[in-house]
Length: 245
Length: 254
Image: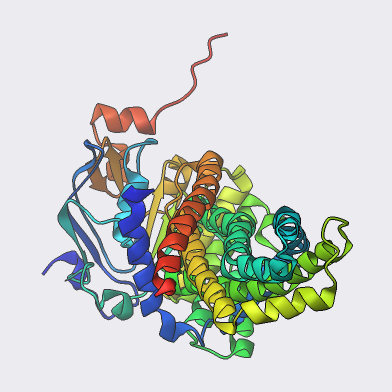
């Protein structure tokens, strides 16, 4: 992966330079955006509900035992907004959408469709990469907002109905409101925007550099997902450190 | 003045290749290729599989960069940045290379729609016209996967025609086709050349196609041009490699 990092940065830079083409490519951006939303929204909701629930289940009884039932809402709220929703959703989208991007563009590379575009003087970065990167960069932060809200609800349901906690919804959300600030949610959304750029660029790069037929496409899909996740985790630390200031 | 620059008034362009060399992983695939294609002629490059034909074609359309040598379009190096705007060139890929996510009509009109050269109504009219030119009807809204091999190649030719090329390159246009479809494609190449005087460069190992359509033929083997001439001259060229390629046949003893 690290051998390709220069190429990935270069592709990202070229995609930034292609930004003035956005209006021209708006239809493709919308198509990709709705595809990402359609493919992921239900999964995001289910996953987030249970992540919120499991956080409450792990920390709630311990906090209640130490007479800190009043902070369960804050713990679940902060964990989801600052860390779990952005990272888990980014990993989900890397697997669900990044893999599809790498497979589609990889197949186009192998079957000479990208060469065909070049012979028609159509820049593959404008035609393929820009719409995908923009669509995922718009969709992932929105999915993270959904994820945070559904996760909070999941945590509240578990905290309310689990016999080890029995924390009413009102108390849970009052505490969440006291501890979690809008800035915390905004930080999480900003992180997810950066992760989206990583997923889009890495997946498109893997697709464009695919060689060697169906086996090559399979290899590219795996690499796109694994490399995206590794970079997401590294950037998660760096961004969290930066946002702490 | 060389052949390539003599007839600039015709629609086709001239092409000169000089000392072209290319290596991949230390293996020299093109070992100094020289030839000239005259404006408006059908020039066929023949050779066995693996002789470097497709790599040569990719150099001519700018998809590969040579290690040494030069390619001139009407006397201007292909590496000149303005060359793509000045001369229109098209490549018909061996596989057709139609975009599988688009309909046949969208594929054929892609150049015009992406470069915003015409209104959608005009594009549709041109697309239908070009598809009819290559004998395809009622395929506008079909997906490439629904077409036969021959139809895909003809759709790819229609896509190339939309560019109104001055130089059209064909990569193995009759491979994987039955003899009847191969003849249809060969006639298509002849007809286009006659009608719009486009310079056509065909890369193929199909002997029937080469001798049926070519004004001149070059034979390439192991990355080198063995001979260039009219079909009759090439047929009588005494080189054993050329003769073995042209006369290869099954030997069945009863």
